[in-house]
Amino acid sequence: MQGKLYVVGTPIGNLDDMVPRATQVLQFVDLVLAEDTRHSGQLLAQLGLSKPLKSCHDHNEKELAGQVVDWLRQGKNIALVSDAGTPLISDPGFNLVRLAREQGVEVVPVPGACAAILALSAAGLPADRFSFVGFPPAKSGPRKTWLQEIGHLQHTLVAYEAPHRILDLLDDLIAVLGSARFLVVGRELTKRYESWYRGTAQEVRDQLAADPQHLRGEFVVLLQGEPSQGELDAAELHRYLKVLLEELPPSRAAAIAAKLLGAPKQTCYQVALAIQQASSEVP
Ligand code: SAM
Image (cartoon, rainbow, N blue to C red):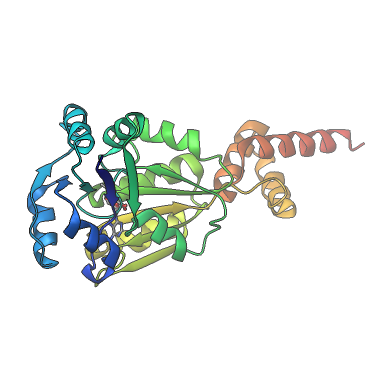
């Protein structure tokens, strides 16, 4: 009889969020693969469990996968956990799960917390369609390119960010997508100091920068999708562009209006051209 690979979600900060079935699985398996064996050893100890642990992280997962699949085929039941939350979601495990599936080994997901999904469920942004975009690039140049690539999507974007980069991300976001884009930041979810910041990109940046305590901990950043042409306040766009066109050519006026309103540049440009043309036709 082949064993099964259990992909087990764990809490993201509050031990009470451990799901009973996840505990049962960890109790029953022969081996637990963990990103950090010391960290997961503590979780097991808190649950009153003692199990053989083997480390499985970004740097050894590929080599280890073949060996683990052999053990599974020999009948061992194995659990995969990350330090916190759901394995594979910005965490190791993809190579192992893919190989197990390719080799016909059963893979069983056991639910636990996932910061992205938790944040989405409580942010108050549309959650019927969304993209999870992981961690932004660490350096400003690639991060701005990344923002240009994803910023035009019209559904909610969910990203993870480290505390020492959160302000840099918001600064680049303001530079590329404008200060008016609406966003939500969820910090320290499920923990004692859970907090939420909501508003335009500029407002959220200011709320976070106002107190060094706000810059500690773990963050999920949720960005409202770019408004579609139908959602834009046409009268407001018209008003902004009319003023800007008194001083600037259409391309510059459109770029500034797009930033101020968080609107698509192309739409602003087309409206700017239409206003310019209409005013040149006036006798
Ligand atoms: N696999 C995990 C999951 O399912 O959420 C995510 C692992 S990823 C390496 C860690 C990132 O998730 C953190 O840097 C942070 O962006 C986010 N995160 C994890 N726990 C969080 C929490 N309690 N509150 C807010 N964000 C959290």
